[in-house]
Length: 386
Ligand code: GLA
Image (cartoon, rainbow, N blue to C red; front, side, top):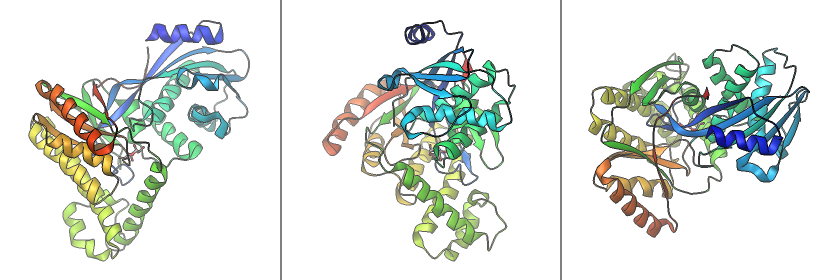
């Protein structure tokens, strides 16, 4: 892959790149819509992601090119004028990262030629945008010798997305991509920003990501709507408990207070966040104990809660999950990521993999009218220089 990037760079910029970087995509095993409620998430980094070849320039220009957006050609940006521009499309993600570096008071005294290539399926909810952010930040840190701590880079990626691009995401994606470890999932307490690695001991089983191939449409506005609903629930519950985030409550504490929330929708949103947080902690424990059956049961419960209480699944994801649950050799299956389309994650016994794909594809197409796509994924390392 490094060779491919070097060749691509040479063709576009007519010179040799000096370094190549990589940042993965991510998949979340469990802990969905908890990261902006101070709860736990349990994602892992994938072995697919974004590659970036770079060479310093002597002037103050950044030249961006992506093989995935070849029709846009080279996009040139002046180092002293890093502002959001809708016409710059994907380049707004790296621009937001450069801006974050500048906001630290750091003066970048020369520009760069940058050649990107990503193999994360676009719009599938596997965090291609956070992957672009982290590959850019890790590269900037190295190329300019900035010595910024990795967790700080993760936070800068989130700020770029929140403030520059305008998507109000939590910290899970950038964290998983910046801090991931091969063959491990990361249990992150988003309230305290404390984390632990858990070995993914799933020998004999595969992690299967299945893409609904549904266009994501209103995902961002619905996402922000759910956040606002959680904030409303928190505002009400704060009158009775001294808390700063919903997931500081146990499910039992929440149940004893839930009648204080009159609006049933708001109550359900809070119940999802709080129950999901408990499931995530239990799932990590089950994995540590080698109890995959329990892990799978919690995954399935998570999907049901996202379907019924949080209402972010929709027909395509529900169809995929239900079909997976009905197959032999499936330990558990649930939607992963923000929802409203995107992918499910399933744990499938290796000898049943082929059957799983054939049956799910056939039945999904009957109900939805088009085919899903399957990716058997491996868990890789976080962002790095190659
Ligand atoms: C998106 C966001 C994350 C997280 C998930 C839902 O992926 O970017 O921060 O909120 O949705 O768990």
